[in-house]
Image (tube, rainbow, N blue to C red):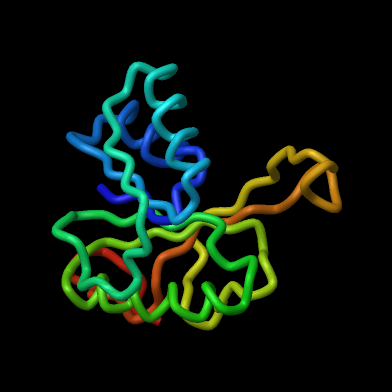
Amino acid sequence: MLDFGSGSGLCAIAAMLAGAKEAVSTDIDPMAVSAIELNARANACRVTPVLRDTLDDPPPDTEVILAADCWYEAAPASRVMPWLQRASAAGIDVLVGDPGRRYLPLGDLAEIASYEVRTTTELEDLDHKQASAYELRGADPRRGSATA
């Protein structure tokens, strides 16, 4: 599985703890890659951190892409969904998680779950936010994904 825009590595670590065979975490921030390494080690998980912008690359050779909290700035957000759509068209299951960021393209997504999550007011405007998990709309129904 690929944890895109991984940040701390949380999704990759959770996937490994849930039984994933392997996890790769990508991020463009060197500090995030360092955090991924430290967090994976602290959780006794093998996660491969990758420091690079993968949005101009073809879809990776993986079964699942997890993309969480990638829609907080307009410029990078405009590049994420087309790349995820190409991955989905290539047969990769794509799951998105987001706490309702401004640039999240809701019209392209089908909500599959929603949760109230605790946040820190040092980073967010509230101490709790509603976060949701989504599938891409129009994904291949033979894979059990949303169709519209």
